[in-house]
Amino acid sequence: MIAASQLRNGMAIRYEGEIYKVLLADYHPGQGKMGGVAHVRLKNLSTGTTWETSLRGDLKVEDLPLEKKAMDFLYSDSGICTFMDSATGEQAEVPEKIIGEAARFLMPEMRVAVEFLGEQPVGVEMPDFIEVEIADTAPPVHAQNDSTWKPARLENGVEVMVPQFIKTGDRIRLDLNTLKYMDRAKAAK
Image (cartoon, rainbow, N blue to C red; front, side, top):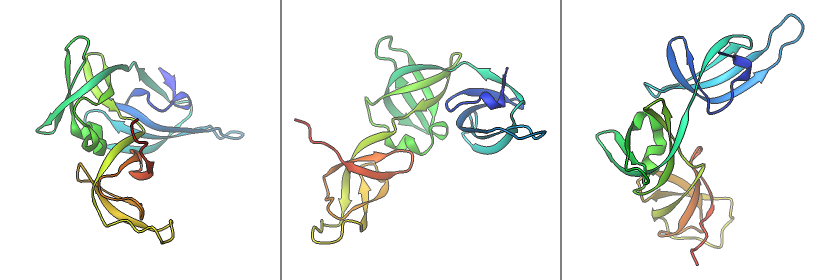
């Protein structure tokens, strides 16, 4: 058991009988008789829903040990993503609803950290940035102001906004948390 004031991003906890992953934890100490408050964003590991709440800093919650294993993404079928440990051949299945929108960016043989609570896979830790290819966008315009953006469709069908100079076939780096363009991907030498 740990105090809510000790919660950190990435932890797994049991609170009110449900198991959650802490997505965001921010502790604000109190003043005088006023106790501190932990503002947290929690993701329910059985339903995939997120919840934001404030907890008293001295509230005790059960800390659960999460184990991470590097696994390769194999395929997705009927809302289930299948991963394999290349060293042991062991496979794990994680529902897409637990992974969230990031599941659309999983590519075959992509290596990610699969999180386990005991023997049960409960989540996937996706990279913060990912390289993707532009499947379709308007022709590039070089003479305009660089602060204007245009829509572009990625190879997986997701639409994002990109600068005017980007063209179809370009590879870009995308911030997976915000789905925002970061920069052009460096060409392999």
